Image (tube, rainbow, N blue to C red; front, side, top):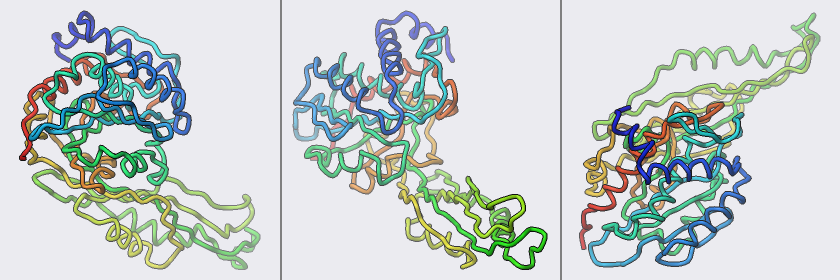
Length: 372
């Protein structure tokens, strides 16, 4: 990290506000499914700001209209972040030197802190209409994510020209996202005494051919607009067996398939069916579509010119895909450290927090006009 960023993080008044806000957010536990307390707290705090309209609440998610002039050619952008964190082991929220520790510090309360401080400081001078979206249940199944109902119900989000999801990306601009499928592969068999295995049918042994095909797979690279996305299929969970001396009659694998943005959800499902080849029962539990990269938008180009660390593809799933299904261009950009996401004793360097704020501040101030 550069000395300039470190100095800002320790002495600049905005840096102090960012650090205090992040510590405040980390002090409010918000594991997935328990977002009410943090939602209430953020509503109360932002209600003290001069907003363009009342805060709109949907469950434990909120839409905050910060600036709204509705002038011809004036773009409408949203900064978007989720309240919830994964359930992990963390000590109390604290600052040690230039690092802040706490559940969700990087994923993604650092992004939320920037959103809040922007609303409280200089957002009114932005060269665009600005909306903040805070939502719940991002860390769980696609169907339970509250951003879906928010996009379906809110009367104003359909006019967005660009949404920026502040997922942890080390202040890199990450374009598009891979799709994700969680599926169960169930091999059936017949129990028997393990001393006489020929009387049964071993469900675990029946998976050998499938596991062999899976082990032989290599990542498949798809290059889209000059960005390489890799399709991969991974067994992440396995369960089976009744006892140490019983031939197992069931063996269940969880299969996670990540597919490139130019692959449809339906085509990805067909790929898994071909891989299983009828040897087991295949059940699709969680289906999340991919999103194509949005690189040629003037708004995205302006964000790149505002000082992002790098531009790269998103080799994971994020809610840019959900915006894409609603016809809204979206990108990933956030101050959180991607390597800290979902980690025990999660933390973030304060310099990244300040740097991310300054990049977004610069971008909001010089937003190009949209075609009328």
